[in-house]
Image (cartoon, rainbow, N blue to C red; front, side, top):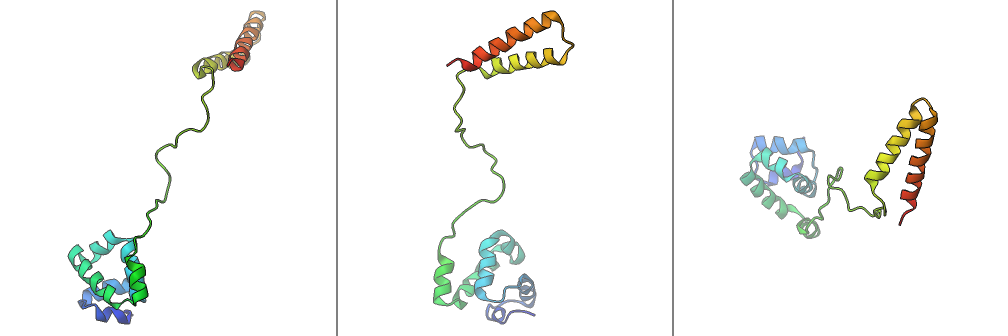
Length: 136
């Protein structure tokens, strides 16, 4: 059933049916739908016709509702941020590439079968890594 206020907007039967499907029971609610989804509302009635209907709709609002409706709505975004915020973590005083290379070599040696010469190489790599991480 169409909300009674729709008959005061000068709508065609087709437009009234379309707007009644939105389910707004007051002029303020319908205006809220328009403000929340202007593009969809304009697709429903056509851009020019939607503006005419909204103009008439504003006339049906109480002064308090009209004042609230004409205030600028704050903008906000929903969903994931696509840009990365600036990093707050300070860069380390050593080369990350060198650290990663040493860690990769250490892991490779540890994953292979232990040999006497690899034990010495592992010790040297671990010492280099320790020195790198402690450097300032």
